[in-house]
Length: 179
Image 1 (cartoon, one colour):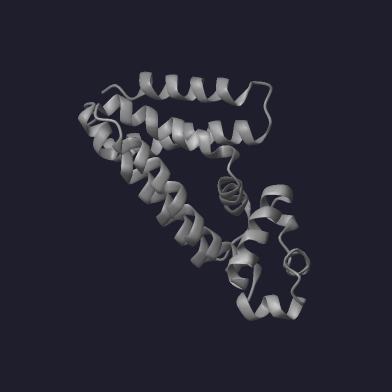
Image 2: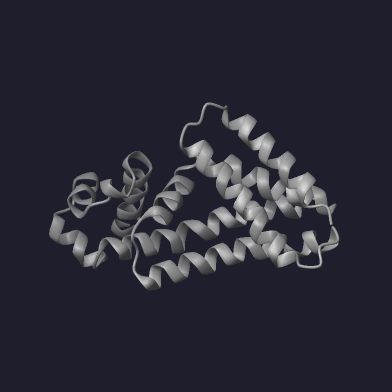
């Protein structure tokens, strides 16, 4: 239960203040633990980040996958892939994953994040192949680039409303994914 409380506190800290806010004293304060007790659960900040990624990214990816599975047509799957990721931007887990991605991580944590993103990209490869792409994996990586750019735009609090950014990204994805 303490580990879960620490992860929840870490999500809040990352969501509210970015990676700089994630410190062991702040985790201790949020959870009511002694600072030394935090070290019993995590050896470093990178270990906290790594576990957050291991716990939260699969949940987030499962939501994207479930939205895609509700669709049958390849274009509808692409739309669900883009729209669901952008709808999740306001979710605390997503903000934590974005903050994690921006932080300085050790090589092991970075590799786990890359693998998790690879799983996300793999979800859309088949639909892109069905749309006629002869290099659907490359198309999937480029499509994810559109999603990532839209996420950054929303996270920055751009002049456009998040809904307008989402609609522009969906429109760009659907026009750009026809083989």
